[in-house]
Image: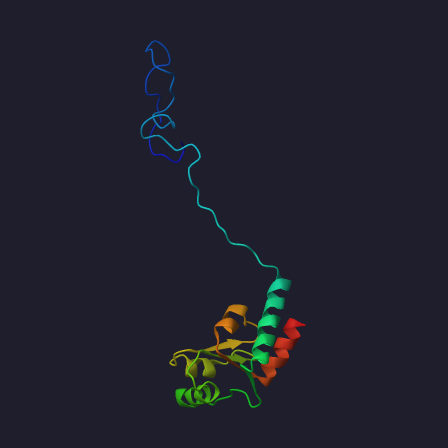
Length: 156
């Protein structure tokens, strides 16, 4: 009743009309009134425990290793200035079929992010921000050596 607009005063007096007693024109039995147990917005979001998230990421990464879809870079992605061409050549060498490629860096690498943002199906992610959804979406995963150490530290 409270969510329906209007209906502040009593529609008619309490006694003497021969009608039932009513306090508002917005009561459920009245035309234009509120719904008794109407639908309410509800969030179906569930919180996943940190342990479960960590275990899921471990399982997905180990599956990518078994499928030989995870590669480790020894040198890293250090660049003096952002250039798209070397990154495109790297992703084509790693994933010649053109599937989605995920590059995992140890820390924030603005040059790598700027070099990759023009390329379709390529994403740069830090080891601390890596999540299961990104790993599952990626056809190939390229991890820096330093990032691998950080991932092991994070997941152990």
